[in-house]
Image 1 (cartoon, rainbow, N blue to C red):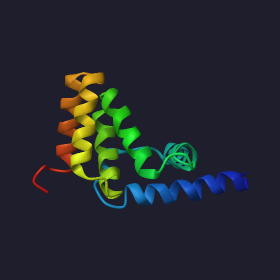
Image 2: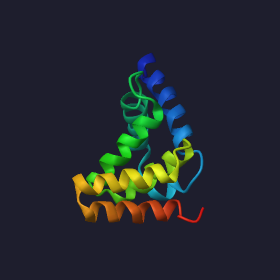
Image 3: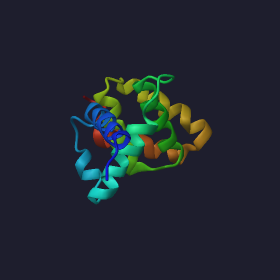
Image 4: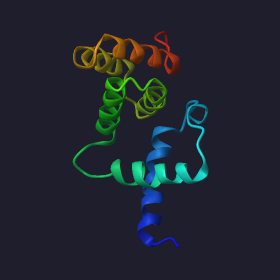
Amino acid sequence: MDNGDNGDKRAKGREIVAKLFSTGPVGEFIPMPKRFREMTVNNVFGEAWQGEDLELTERSLVTCAMLIALARDDEMRVHFTGARNLGIPRAKLEELITHSAHYAGWPAAVGGFRALADVWPPEE
């Protein structure tokens, strides 16, 4: 049974997902069962991505930085697409990756640049 809180989380989560992933090949990156997808929308985007202390673009950049540090290339592709859809300039993502190299290591940064180029080629 769904209570109002879950419905509210779902609605808020769908709103964030629509902003982040309105364009781009995100579906290719995230093949997941319906139940897991619903948990992601409700809990990750409907709860963790909510709040007034960080702007949506700040949450996006923090997420990208963590994924770079963790060398999660597939997820970087998804969230670099989201950052682009939010209007974050490519140059800012390049600087984020460069800065991350000093804390997460050069291989993590190289993976970040590779992932960024996959979804947002430098010449665009």
